[in-house]
Length: 192
Image (tube, rainbow, N blue to C red; front, side, top):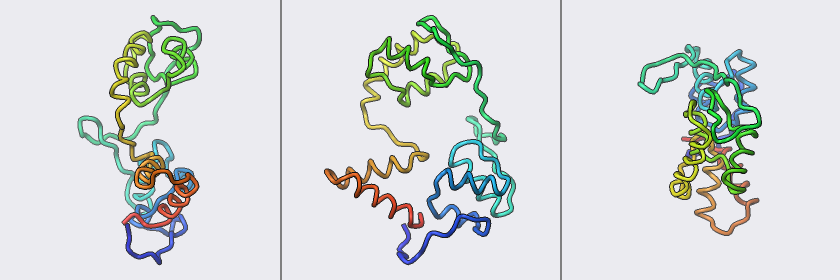
């Protein structure tokens, strides 16, 4: 964090440089509004929008995303395929592009019980296992419960959640209102 406590978060505008944009915390809603004003695509997550805005503010071309093999590929909009509709059962095959829908939630709660929720393991399974059956997804749920019970890394796109978890570890038993005040103070400071 910056040691200069006198610094004030600037207004999010086209007057910023890409480097200045990256120094501060912005919500996705704030970034999306600026991107739309500038004609910058708003697709993808917060990190992708931030990278495109930083490049645009510096007059650079839109950055390319890296593929799993490391090669640069232009970002393509994510398209959902055909979504499953009720009724579904264990023999139902997960189609490409299936989302973690209410239809799937109802099936999994029926098969697994009221403790079912779409955690990272199940979201990844649904997204990456087209062609597998829902019965196999139930097996995956049960097979991942030990790992799911272990502390998980919170992705960078969930900065608020990460901050609150870490803050509560350092300040056990302190009220949520104090944690939220600490979050507001944290996000008002530059990142460097």
